[in-house]
Length: 190
Ligand code: B4P
Image (cartoon, rainbow, N blue to C red):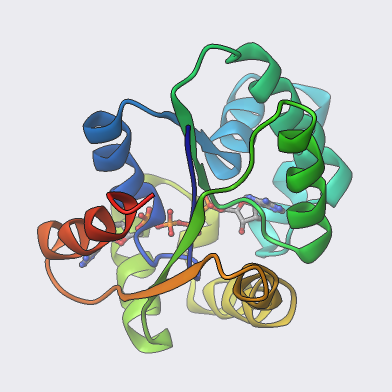
């Protein structure tokens, strides 16, 4: 079973590369950002609460996203494997994910981290914001808050996987296909 964590700052290309990976390896895509946005568009209580935080560029509480991932794992019992996109975003989420997978007799195969500098991230997100309608992509101040949140709370997750020998860093600047090739080289080894 291939269980890949696709990691990187906001706008690094996790969602973009996930779409290509699920097709090539026949995996289930678990994006906490997408699940939260679908809760928002369905007007659920969870969505209403998440929206307030996401619009400010801050993370939603761990227990909320861990619960969502747990439900999705249960709903996809026959999957070949999973791409975790935007999750785990804190060390507590990474620990919870290990426990959830262990209870299903599987584990994370590895983490691929996309490395992109802050200036490029800001440019990509503002560009996407022009037509995505995503409030968190709309202004530089919120984007900077998201990057700060990443540096404070999410970057330590890389060390969690490094200490397990499961971390591989990839240059996230270049064409989408070039970056995809780099990720596939890593994934093919698992
Ligand atoms: P996410 O939806 O996960 O969004 P993201 O980090 O902004 O995007 P991603 O890295 O996937 O970028 P993409 O490929 O789209 O999170 C949104 C919010 O949800 C968070 O701020 C938080 O509030 C909440 N949340 C989500 N998960 C959570 C969790 N686990 N815990 C707590 N809170 C959570 O690429 C961005 C743009 O770059 C696109 O326009 C794309 O076309 C472009 N691009 C991609 N690759 C490129 C390349 N190689 N060259 C040029 N442009 C490229």
